[in-house]
Amino acid sequence: MPRDYPQQIAAGLRTIGRRRRAAWIVFLLFLPVMGLAGVSFRWVHSRFVAFGICFVWMGVYALAGHRLVFTRCPRCGELFHSRRDWRRPMGMFTRACLHCGLRLR
Image (tube, rainbow, N blue to C red; front, top):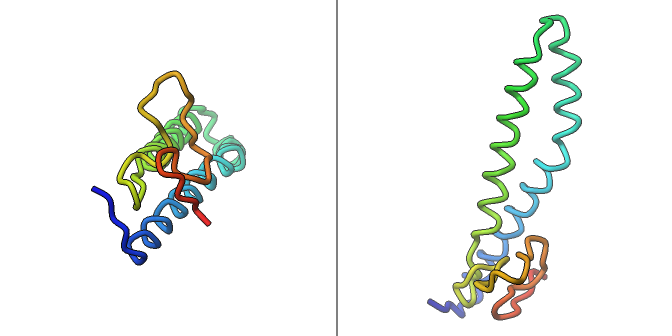
C-alpha cells in the first residue's frame, strides 16, 4: 500500500539506513572478532569455542542481511533491494528503490 506522507517516508528511509549500517558493521567486524577469539581461546587448546563463535557470527550476519534485503520501500511498499524478476541480481547495496526509484538521500 503506497504511503506518500513525508514523515513516514523519512522514517522508512532511516530504518533502511540503520539496517544497511548494521549489515556492514557485522560484515566488517567478522575477521577482527574471529582473530581475537582465536588468540584468546588458544589456552583452552580447543577450536570448538572459536568455531562456535564463528557460527554464531554467521547467524548474526544472515539475520542482518535478511532484515536488509526484505525491507519494504516506504513509498511504494515493494521490496526496496530486490525485484521479483529472478534473472536480475538483488541490489543489496543499491541507493534507490528498484521499483519506484526513491533515493536514500
